[in-house]
Amino acid sequence: MDRVQSVLAKGHQLTTAPEQSRHLYRQMRLIREFEEHCLEMALAGEIVGGMHPYIGQEAVAVGVSANLGRDDVITSTHRGHGHVLAKGAEPKRALAELYGATTGLNRGRGGSMHAADVGLGIYGANGIVGAGAPIAVGAAWAARRAGRDQVAVAFFGDGALSQGVVLEAFNMAALWSLPVLFVCENNGYAISLPVDRGLAGDPVRRAAGFGLHSAAVDGMDVEAVADAAGQAVAACRDGAGPHFLECTTYRFHAHHTVEYLAGIAYRDDAEVADWKTLDPLVRQRARLPEATADAVDAEIAALIAEAAEFARSSPAPEPGNALDYLYAGMAPSRPGVVV
Image 1: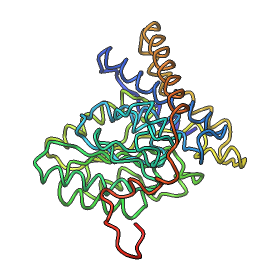
Image 2 (image 1 turned 90 degrees about the vertical axis):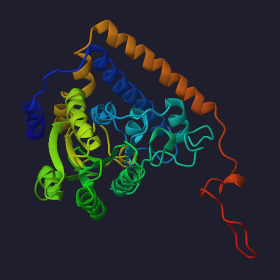
Image 3 (image 1 turned 180 degrees about the vertical axis):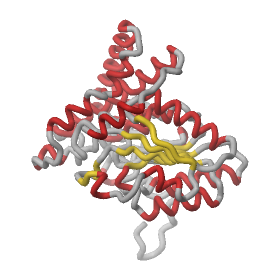
Image 4 (image 1 turned 60 degrees about the vertical axis):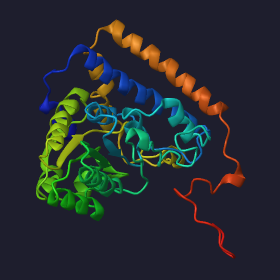
């Protein structure tokens, strides 16, 4: 409850134009509808291996990505569907990827935790905690070396804030003044470990200690995130060096669908209910004319229904082709060596 009150106290003054407000709501509705369908499919066994639902955190992915161009780069997490969709991935191909189909973003090889689309600047979701941070730093360094006007964004959770490779990425980005925005989605839990029991100090001060321009924002308000991220992205692009944005948010569902099957519980119902009063979709919908919001809802429902049918009707990879696309360029065969 204290974290909920802290978020409410930050407040936000509406600054975006009506069309932008509609776009932000549409993108969040897309992610919510996608995730709810995927959750249902995973629990039914249609999506093998389960998934990490992003439901509740949509404002972060959408608010940040609203400020990015096609050539800008993002790296994501094990909870990455929202980031991938917000950056522009086609919903039906994203769902087909989770389904393990050849029509997926990565021909069914990436699955839920490793979906990518390099052509859209999506350098991949990642099952390793914090692993996207150094990849984003590398992308930013490469872009600057090539004289390209690009910003790289690394999304990660509060559980990654003590991961050594993330802190090394902070250090390198600051040392070389790279155009990187580090976005911490602080949802209060590292799986089941509360943030106040797993993290010493304050995330913003920790990042500032490395020389990053650091700020915190209400991650349950997409317009607040869009404003804060817009300032940070513009500063990165103008050569002001790396930035860090802590987005206080909350996931409404389990860390992973296996929690439902195993009966794992570490949050009480009252806590979840309190956070649902800050549902980012409800808050953004209230800023739109009802007819506009209803039209968006109908459009997205049809889009996701089409995506689900596309995934279900797409072919699975042939077992004999399991090693295809394993490497960018397969090494030539040598006697006695299987590649």
